[in-house]
Image (cartoon, rainbow, N blue to C red; front, top):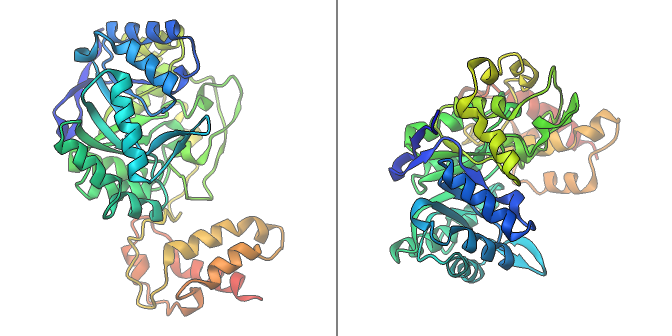
Length: 386
């Protein structure tokens, strides 16, 4: 079977259901990288995500796409930089512009198809990136200058990524979608929002950073790989009932609403072939139904700090208060007080949990059935004991 194409949301671009992330190609010999990229293009892949800012890697990418630019949809990330010999991120617009223009030069192209606002998760960071003088304004400038066709947003937090989608400021969202995040609170709403707003969803981490494919029964998945960055308390330990294949992982991802394409990382021709095996796989080989119950461990009632519960008549920052409560749970379980840092952050809140009048308006607004009043009582008891 040939690769099936889908629309990249409102961009109108056609992309294959399986694309390629390039993270695992860094530090490999140029001949290896060029070989993987050229084979991917020959097999129907033409969307490539590139966020690494290391000069040598960008030079290698430029060599890989030389003569192939018209067959490739290229992305890069605004705010991704190289500092002190390592990859880093910044919100400095001058520095971001420098590295973006450097990427154009090293890639040998006049424009990038999708320019992502790089790796934005905390609310404070979101406000900086999307606010006046932030990276969004810079991306718009490059778009006006013809250096970027479309604007994307990459993140690992449902709450901030949902805001980006609903803002109508972005064309593409890159977000983790994988079996392990199946029941994560808010994930389904985010996917549905992408479909409703015609924002293309590029599913990253389809193998949860390789965790799903490991030859072990007990696996650990990081919060950010679950789309739960800045959201403590998610289960990260899972017991697999059986081995999981790349085909099953990709089958799950490509069946989710709103997904335009997924970007597995492949560092060799064998790994690339393993991903592309999806297109010729049988229905039985794609079937992941026996695996899914393993990842149904999230329960409704878990706060995702989305602030749909606000405004609070007592002016309590409900999401922040619950976040501090969840971060203090390890001490609670051990019969200890919250750390001095957590206590100080709680004490600095304009209004605290003891100000709750139990009106219940927040619970009526909450899309995840969080017992907010009970959590306020718990927080008031925990943090009120000095």
